[in-house]
Amino acid sequence: MRIAVYPGTFDPVTNGHLSILKRAMRVFDVIIAAVAVDNNKNTLFSLEERTALLQESVKDLPNIQVEAFSGLLVDYVKRKQATAIIRGLRVVSDFEYEMQMAAFNKDLYDGAETIFFTADTEYSFVSSSMIKSIAVLDGDISHFVPEVVYHGLRRRYGFE
Ligand code: ADP
Figure: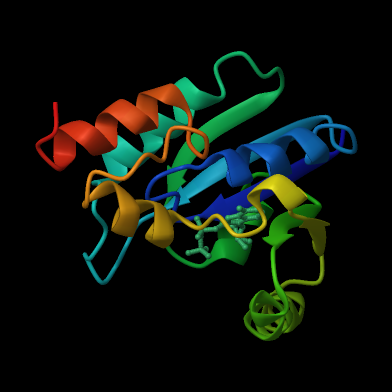
């Protein structure tokens, strides 16, 4: 069974994240969407909220598990017996950071390969931080996030 881990902050999950998950589902048997504890404590949503929003967003997708994790990613990957780490690439500026991360992770643990999926063109400019910047000003982000996230953001920013 091919198990992959898709790690991220998911603050909050967007349709871009979901498109990566859907692509990866064609390649792997099980994907664990792993929500990272934010050690700097500067996320908009708490770990529990980010996990719950992601859980709700993937409830109709088969073979996707959602879990929170802390500590070194490769230790978690090893514990889960996963052989791949999934990441998404949107624009060239993602590339340098992702290459560096992949190289470090490979050095720390040789048992998993980092696999990149390219973003859907429709969502290639979507990031959680841009979504928050627009939502806080009451801009319409409904096309870019799952419904549960849309309402979650509006509630958080006092528009509902
Ligand atoms: P991190 O803080 O680990 O970068 P994110 O939640 O921002 O966590 O992103 C997790 C992964 O999803 C990253 O590989 C990121 O490049 C990718 N990603 C984020 N948004 C999109 C998108 N719109 N399309 C494709 N991949 C994306």
